[in-house]
Image 1: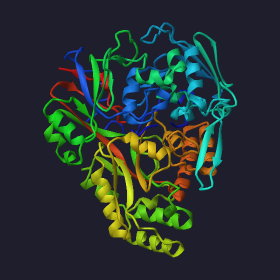
Image 2: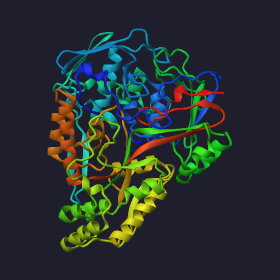
Image 3: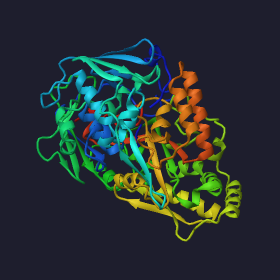
Amino acid sequence: MRFRRNSKALGIVAIAALALSGCGGGGGTGGASQSGGDPNKIITAYNNEPQHPLLPANTNEAYGSHVVELLFEGLRTYDPNGKPVNALADSIDSSDGQNWTIKVKKGSKFTNGEEVTAKTFVDSWNFAANSKNLQTNGFFFESIAGYDDVSAVTTEKSADGKVTTTPAPKADTMSGLTATDDSTISVKLSQPEADWSLRLGYAAYFPLPSAALADPKTYGENPVGNGPYKFAKTGAWVHDQSISLVKNPDYSGPREAKNGGVTFKFYTDPGPAYTDLQSDNLDVTDVLPSNALKTYVTDFPDRNAAKPVATDATLNIPPYNPNFQGEAGKLRRQALSYAINREEITKVVFNGTRKPAKAFAPPVIEGFNDNIPGSEVLKFDPAKAKDLWAQAEKIKPYDGSKPLQIASNTDGGHKEWIDAVANGFKNNLGIQAEIQPFAKFAEVLNLRKSQSLPGLTRAGWQADYPSLYNFLGPVWATGASSNYEKYSNPEFDKLLKEGLAAKSTADANDKFNKAQEILFKDLPGLPLWDYTVPIVWSNNVVKAETGWNGAILYYNITAK
């Protein structure tokens, strides 16, 4: 979470033609307008406590992102089909893919009255990239010249092998980023990247008012943005209970709110939320309990939708776990993958709302390849699994003194599929496994970040912008923002960089798919399945829909 996350490919002309190959299926309605209803009524929506205070560059999980993306507006946004649309940018141009000129629209303001200028963006991006500010999404500025100096850290390894990093920036600002006047941003990249501007709709690139840079901790608890919504005047964020947003009357961008506000109600279990929806005490959710996947269409006739989206799931294997290190660990990683019956789980547990993974990215993303060398490890093969496990035992015995823990948040409806995976491990490998439950997804992320998990962890990715790179770079590149398990392979990083510099979509995706071959050899995570996201809504709502990456378009919901 929300998975959260980029790709390189196209020339500037081709960017406008970028499309997700499978986005039209299911019950999604694209950008269809809604008529009737009460434009001032508040919508209530399913959510959970965000991991961090609400700073855009420090928010890369779904629950915080739902809020941040409504509070802020960036240079670009994405329409329901994933096409980039200029928001605060009048123009974004480059003649060589390395030197970019961005013209910022004049007159836009934060809800505190402060104007949004080119300098606002420059200051916000430098703040995000600077390692001393500890912003999770700082990695997204890696392409800009001077990023390495601003993001520098020192690394120390303790006697017990634990690695710690300390911020040590060599500069306060990126050399390739300047505001030449109030409305012009000049960006120089460290290498040509023809489609760099595609990522500018992601939250890491949102502007921040000066108060946020002066006191980010305080600001994050009561953020002031420039998007279609703003915090309610009183009781906006009641921790572990709710966040209340109201419509920003001064917003005039492409995501104009069709309702009076959104109140996110926090749940630690999707079951009660589903019951609340059935009784019209909650208006919309994209998280359904597993048993409802078989009944939601009949439970909510004419009040449901589903379509394939740019979201996938993995089972990550921390490299610091001794059972999965070295040659024996490599064999065990493969054995675990062969022991998972993805086909059965997606049919029985998910009722067809998931499809077995074929790669480290979902089919709706341009450049998807379902025949990458090494991907055969995603097939269910109990005999192969047992053989590989036996080979590993001859090298180094497995420590099974305790059941293998699979960490997961309990609010996302994950227990049933984890139980199924655990049974597969028991039946096919002879090892005990069980869920390690957490009420909040933030707790799982914090343990992953501190490298404190005793076993495996569920993980997932909901695309930040429509590109193959986005499912690889931010998740698996060395030092990447969501590479919590700290996987690192220089050859993988090299192929990603070559893909970013490619001059055509096809060449870029070839590099990215070659990079996936390395992932299939190393298996830092096991691809599980790709998502078709079902959503349901109450009788209080005219209609709801998801966008290209599976996120609900809250601003486009009209209440009755």
